[in-house]
Amino acid sequence: MSTLQSVAALDEPASPAELEGLPAPGRCLIMGILNVTPDSFSDGGLYADTRRAVDRGLELAAQGADIVDVGGESTRPGADPVALEEELARTVPVVRELARAGVCTSVDTVHAPVARAAVEAGVRMVNDVSGGLADPAMAQTIAVSGVLYVATHWRAPSREMDRHAHYDDVVTEVTAELTCRIRQLTEQGVDPARIVLDPGLGFAKRSEHDWTLLTGLGALRQLGHPLLVGASRKRFIGTALADGGAGEVPPGGRDAATAAVSALAALDGAFCVRVHDVRASLDAVRMASAYRAHRSQQL
Ligand code: PMM
Image (cartoon, rainbow, N blue to C red; front, side, top):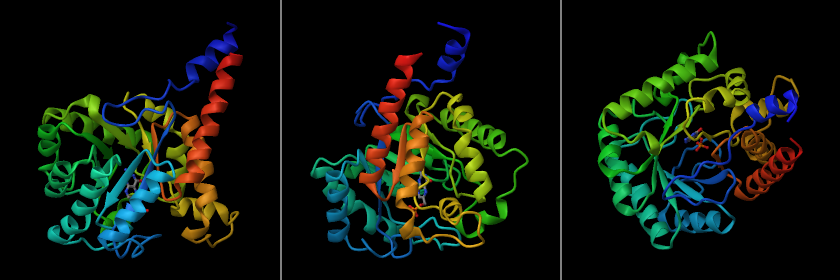
């Protein structure tokens, strides 16, 4: 191997991680988004009742989603919190039916009681966009259930997160804050081997922060945990599609670009991408896999 080749090999992300309880297709996983909410930023209201939500979950799985992520509270900037009973009523019946049908599910919640009920209903992973900061009981809930856990970089609730979008060096700060999360979660009994990390694109981030994090996945990979990337239809994609103009392409027109970002994230070693349009991103990550395999043969 030449020096150039060995340097390239060092840069090459490791083979896709495998986590017990999740499918292991040998490529970046696809998490399909199922927002059972009236007010999410791009699909709010579409699947707001249980029957429609279950049908959509089955459809996402049929399209190739490895995991269906069921959420009952919008996390868009400025969103109001939802009563716990309402979030439970939105998510738990959907998870139960999808799990019964053999679909691998996660629950998107920052609340320990919702996580607990969803685990009982059959989720294999809890996706917490606050990384355990919103509810002090979350770490214990995860520790006791032994379920997989996505810890996302987060600084503040939706209503106020835009005020916290200030960084001198976003990759270094996000890495340090996630490191702190891992330490606190593991001190409270969460198995580190069951923690997935997420840079939290759009959560207390402006577009330039999202891009810097997306291009800095290599640094986050050094933390040694599988990485989940949630870029789907987010504003940084809409503004990039506007070619530097002042406007942005609306969320419904961002799926092809999301798939391109999925390919880039997979190429950089992402473990999973969370997307609305499953088919497009599945094809995209398959292409990234094939590309990586052929590139490594040439090294
Ligand atoms: N983004 C949203 C919701 N949940 N979960 C993870 N792990 N990562 C994310 O980036 C993420 C998330 C907001 O997007 P949506 O309203 O389209 O679901």
